[in-house]
Image (cartoon, rainbow, N blue to C red):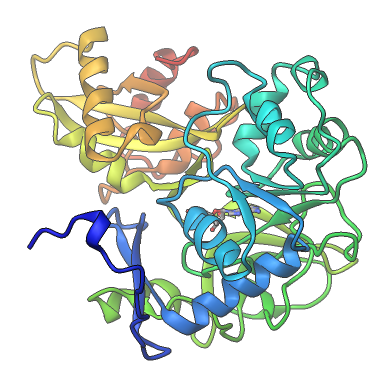
Amino acid sequence: MCVSVDNASEECDPEWMDAEDPLFVLYTSGSTGKPKGVLHTIAGYLLYTSLTFKYVFDHHQDDVYWCTADIGWITGHSYITYGPLANGATSVLFEGIPVYPHVGRFWEIIEKYRVSKFYTAPTAIRLLMKYGIEPLQKYDLSSLRVLGTVGEPINPEAWMWYHDAVGQGRCPVVDTFWQTETGGHVLTPLPAATPLKPGSATLPFFGVLPIILNEHGEELEGEAEGYLVFKKPWPGIMRGVYGNQECFENTYFKKFPGFYVTGDGCRRDKDGYYWITGRIDDMLNVSGHLLSTAEVEAALTEHSAVAEAAVVSRPHIVKGECLYCFVTLKDFREFNHSLMDELKRKVREKIGPIATPDFIQNAPGLPKTRSGKIMRRVLRQIARNEKDLGDLSTLADPKVVEVLLSQRCEAAA
Ligand code: PRX
């Protein structure tokens, strides 16, 4: 049936739902390489995104709010769509990148719409920082009140620049730690109420109980570093992995029974502040997007020339982390630039542009233990150009390491 817009009714009755009915499923990378469908439900998610939006951005009716995230990712779901709409907020919606058509694009939009609450990612801040303060000075940023960041640990230098140059020293920076799975902010300052420390997501949101555990699952008190877990659920926590209850239990509740495991490492300082130290599983965080090494390896080995691949992370000045790939080719295949381009294209097609490898190194052999397990620690050290590779005695063939070291990629491919 075709209904023209002119004849369509202006009434649209809401569909009444149960509080625990599914709201949406959002796929996120899993450490085994298979994406997991994170399931959120109607009432808890809506309540939680609505409440965190209100308090974390100190929302007022005359605010103009702008979150630069992609609407298809969880930040866009929670803090472009559900949280702001539930509060009746005035929002700027933006489709584009920070440096096109010019590097002052963000600042121009803030001036144009008098944005008061601005939410972006450390990778965007680090990118814009490279252009200095000149592009900022061309615009009036006096409308800004609160600055938010999300997606990955923010280095103190980028935090200071955000605070001093963008916020002109008068806007609190809310470093919000959360995950697709948590639905909304779980560790975060509240603007003007929480004393800030550059690089720390500070303290838990209302009702959230973070705990730090050691390898044996023992709870650590006071100043400590270990696994970040949560002791009690909150309204916005995921309700399951769509269609796979077993994966849900194994991924989040098995390692430390009785706790929700975030997969992140964390330090608590003497003031009780939390500092996220990064992922502790085989996951990478590229520009705020989680990728599993296994899914990139699977994409690479789909290429007919590749026999085996191992992917590790390497620090990157703008993206936080980037992909360094070691590939072992099948016999008689030649490693050259056109093959590198094909491999990059393969990964882009299978996963997306965000996963494009920065480094691809030819690896005639990979460092393996006698039982055939790839020693990723050694690959990570080679990728990072660390001089001391530590104990290599468990390797089946230590010579492999010398060859890899002699062929290290210095510059991005
Ligand atoms: O490692 C943490 C990092 O991003 C992961 C969650 O990624 P994703 O589910 O894609 O959601 C991203 C947007 C919420 C976390 O496990 N992460 C997110 N925010 C921060 C962070 N790491 C440090 N500080 C943050 N503020």
